Amino acid sequence: MTQNIYDNTYFFQEYSRMERSLLGLAGAPEWPSLRSMLPDLTGARVLDLGCGFGWFSRWAREQGARSVLAFDVSEKMLHRAIEINSDNAISYRQMNLEDLCLPEAGFDLAFSSLTLHYIENLDRVFESVHHSLIPGGSFVFSTEHPIYTAPRHPEWLVEDEGSRIWPVNQYLEEGVRVTDWLAKGVVKQHRTIATTLNSLIRSRFVLTHVDEWGPSDDQIGLHPEWAVHRDRPMFLLVSAKKQRGYESERSTVGRETPYSRHRSATDISSF
Amino acid sequence: MTQNIYDNTYFFQEYSRMERSLLGLAGAPEWPSLRSMLPDLTGARVLDLGCGFGWFSRWAREQGARSVLAFDVSEKMLHRAIEINSDNAISYRQMNLEDLCLPEAGFDLAFSSLTLHYIENLDRVFESVHHSLIPGGSFVFSTEHPIYTAPRHPEWLVEDEGSRIWPVNQYLEEGVRVTDWLAKGVVKQHRTIATTLNSLIRSRFVLTHVDEWGPSDDQIGLHPEWAVHRDRPMFLLVSAKKQRGYESERSTVGRETPYSRHRSATDISSF
Image (cartoon, rainbow over all chains, first blue to last red; front, side):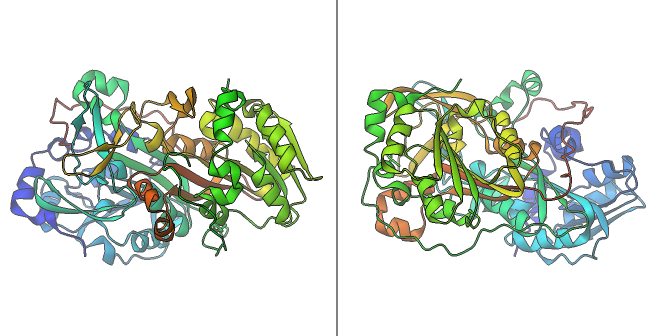
């Protein structure tokens, strides 16, 4: 069950003060990259999964989308969305994405911004999204990057000679990570890039682009303090398509492979 | 131009003493995972890109491959391959993979083990491999993981309370990394996962599986010292297919996207 931290009064108050809350898409540094991965929205039926304050839903309508169905688990977020980003063709609904149940082939685009790292059962969500898209439909999302979520102590350290380092460990140990971000005890799911991409592939999506997002030189020119994010990416952006008109080829992965182990102990650096 | 470090006498001597050199595939801990990503080889025409001592080429023949064309940049490696892994249907040839020129649709499988991180122009190699495969053909490779190659000082550190940490920085700064591994001044290319995958997608491959390899619980049971590799993966394994019978859908990425920046300076942790 996804934690509904956005309905925590203190968290909500702090989140509401962030630039991406106040300025909408223009306050999100990864938005130009994410936007470049979107298809033309003219006439599109759009799903917004984890819509928050509804900034993307409204933008999609401004780009010519026919309709937007927008979900969020948080009542407070939806209340604000209805206040500031209402539109007669946007439907805001409260729902945990793990309970999604959508009509078949009813949407041209599914979009999700920085929500999937709260979701425990990602396979279930990806299958539901695939089912809901028309053949040729797009799925574009951002999520926290696993290099960012992995560490036991996710804080910058400084090496002896002054280099900044991001202390990666437990990268392959997937599952819950509890951090104090805006409020204490925020629960996120750490997943490798491979797990996310293989889940898409198993759901019969075809991957079309992957972006381990960091600020561009132009962005660093305007915001020198963002340069840290080139040392380790904070966000993972992905676009995928539901194939048109044919059964996708399935991966051969998962076959049993007999293998005898003849290794003896060896220096760990000498693979 | 790829550095030919394997023809360095000292490097070659040290490399020859590694388990993966002495034991072949059974000495490579990632081999069971890589093997599980391979198609059936019965009757297959196989490319082995960076064949080294020829352990995979020989194994492919033992699995029923019709023929193997095996390339390596190093004369010393090929000399040993001919000594210990000769076969009348394996052709060993000296070639820098950046100069590959292959017949169209002449192969069922292209395989490459821990070679592509030496290659500067990856796009060129992927295009050449795609051209050389039959529709439906497979490309399966391993390369060093970018978390492993990124750091300025790629060595484990220990935190105050005893946790091991891998000091990631300059992850998004792609290009040359020079390390002292077996010999001084070994030149490798650091590339993000996104860059590698997008290059495959641009070459019209369909991704079928991604593995950020770490040892399994069983492997750690036999080799407890391998557990460090669960803290940060050392290898990236990828499989992809050349599509059958239709033009692949291309990514929409690369469109120009006008965007106005309204952000002001902000705390770097508050994206």
